[in-house]
Image (cartoon, rainbow, N blue to C red; front, side):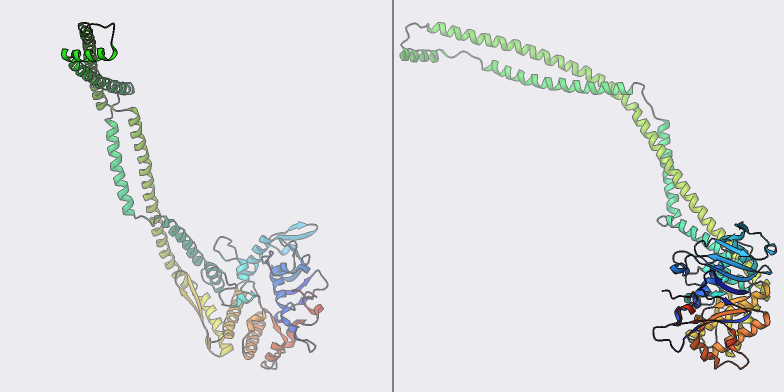
Length: 572
């Protein structure tokens, strides 16, 4: 139970609380004008402060962090904690230390000490609150958490009034499953294990995506074909012959090929030259005598030569010239023929030598080719191992998926058994919810818990045809949670912002307040809620005479009086 809320700044309007109804009222005064509003007086801020002292997250986007004027304030609440009343203090500036005052000896764990003050680190504080209020002893992944559980008992923002089973709009499904199961008396571990399985399947399906482009059959075919190819290459490698002088022989063959090419070209040139010489010899003959006589007479008539050779002398000279020319050509022809013959002999010898060497190269292989074949085999082995690993990984993932699905089926069976084992507990939740709806509407409301992968929660509510009715679903559900868990655990307070009664007919609000007052009186519970004065006046008309609602107003916050706002000033 919470007894007091205050701050270390005198402008703050502190509030003292009791069991039963506790109203934080936003008051619209007679002097208020159109610019005054009850929405900024601090009703929701008070709920934020209580939640802040109970370990809510605070960062630059947090509600309280945005109010610059309170950045050095410390807020405190007085509350029950391990069978004693303790004062709990937390500052905006240093939110990671929760200072605690009271009988420290009553605590199961002694807090740390600093400057004669005792404190818990934030995470430890949340752990001990969870242990005290909800008997929490598990802090693993996908287990109930104090901060999630307490948020069903402190609904302070519009997004927490959408559905009974969620306390904020982005709450993860596993969190909804686990924490509602815990509060309703179901086996929350089944819900947690289902979430673990779900996460594992999610990872497996993510891993299987890389196999989308190929099938197991295609991979097996690639493996077999590569194994065959590798076998053939290994056979070739085992029969591979390498001549110890392979490179020298190969170089000599190349040299012989060059020489044969040179000799062949030389002979071709020589043969052309021989043909020309043979042709010249055949055309070299002495001119006829009558031609010489005519030529000589023409020259004598033209030049009137005084000194001139006789015609016989000229003819003799010419004959000697042709004779010498033929003699020269015959000598050249003999030399060319001889050179051609020598070249042909060399061509034959070198050709034979080259042929022998080529036969050696044909029956042996080069070292480079051997290395290349080795490299190909090595690369193929790597590819084969990759394919085998690929197949093994695929088969392992598929087997893991089968195993997980098998575990999932076993877990379903276990959950069905646990469902029966915990029947008394969750049946009580359903009965209490039904009692609440009957009190408000005279009709049964159905809290339905179906077994699917884990649990499927839903509500069939009477006259569920308006937004206001959906708020009453939340009210009946939360009150049921409070009553049930107060009997089994130490949570004994429920806090609602005025949003819980928005759009709700004043008659139903009056009924709701009667219901919660009856429960609080019967089980010593505490209900803290905020309301605006104009709504309260409507509700009063519907309340029985014995319920003096004004007696439960613990704090009035006035719209046009800044010092009567919660913080003592107006903020944006």
